Amino acid sequence: MCLALPGRVLGVNGKEALVDFDGIRKNVNAEFIKVRKGDKVMVFNNFVIERL
Amino acid sequence: MRKVLDSRKLGNFDGFRVLPIKDRELFLRYAVPCGEVLVKRGEVGEDLLKQLNNSVKNREEINYPVEDVFKVASRMCTIIAKKMGKNEIDAEVIRRYFLIEHESAIRWRQQIRPELKLEECLVHPGRVLKLGDENVLVKTPLGERMFRNDFAQNLRPKDWVSVHYDYVAEKISENHVNRMKRTRL
Picture 1: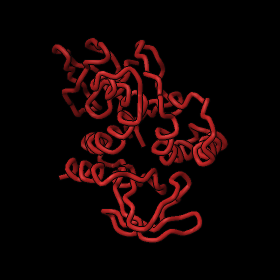
Picture 2 (picture 1 turned 60 degrees about the horizontal axis):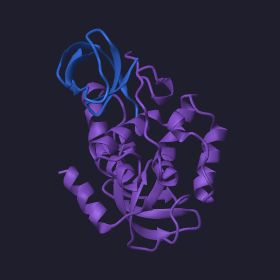
Picture 3 (picture 1 turned 90 degrees about the vertical axis):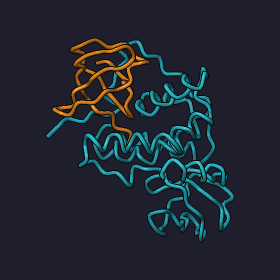
Picture 4 (picture 1 turned 60 degrees about the vertical axis):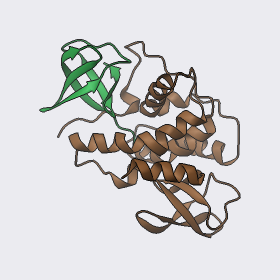
């Protein structure tokens, strides 16, 4: 099942965003959806696919 | 317990435009099998899923906005299409997602949520061993077992197929099989 995971953006560096997933932090690709610090996002396969 | 949202929870707040799905039948061959999970979660009606299943099975025209049902897959296909310089989700994009990139997506998710099931989510290559009336015995990397044959037509023993959950999605080429194997090394 293609379930995306919710996270919160901690910071943005160019096309990359640092996202917190309930304590697990990952740098993800934010090339296709613009995000800002504090945004809630959905991430799948290391891509931000939705800004909530 | 951490919260997991699925495609049905995604809106369109961010203005992201999902590209049109050109080959809706092929998209549904891969998406419908895991739609049963959405039914179990109460997020998609069983009747709708059956309707989509029958549309593919009977080669009927598909007018339903499948992007609204399988939003994560359609958004990922949109990103892949854009990376490939395309303005629609065609068969090449759909196969790139479900046969190639879907594997890394599921494994990426497991790094963060290891409790989520892995193996049944993956699309595997397999070889047809025996044909039944409605089912097919397929040898996959996980072993031999029966799969529903709602979608693929004119299968023969030794054909290569892709399998997803309990379904044979489609007959695939040996080139596809080799590409799938390379991504899993």
